[in-house]
Length: 125
Image 1 (cartoon, helix red, strand yellow):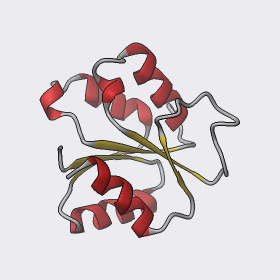
Image 2 (cartoon, one colour):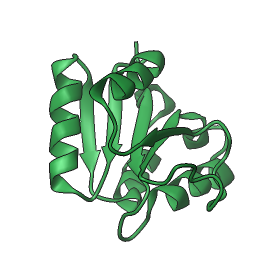
Image 3 (cartoon, one colour):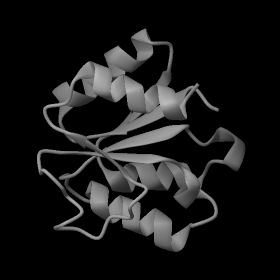
Image 4 (spheres, rainbow, N blue to C red):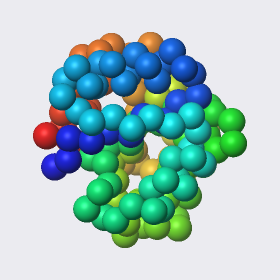
């Protein structure tokens, strides 16, 4: 698996904390401020350069996490849609209010570093 993680969050502080924590664990982290910029970047990559995991915020401008996930699953199921995805949300179960596929990992805010690293280690080793 790849040791690369994408973090997609419009909150500068959250992005910086996640970037620091994941880089400290030895991961290569690429950060984006919204789903649209991440999607446009990913479309230019070859399958060999895909990250091992994408961590998305639930609410963001331009393209939120749910829209990003549903877009890659619908429009690119064999390529971008095959990348493991985790969504960060303060909602108890965001699947009740959105149309997220069951394989999407939900990380509840506030999340512990241990919970985050457990998910990342599972997909990016």
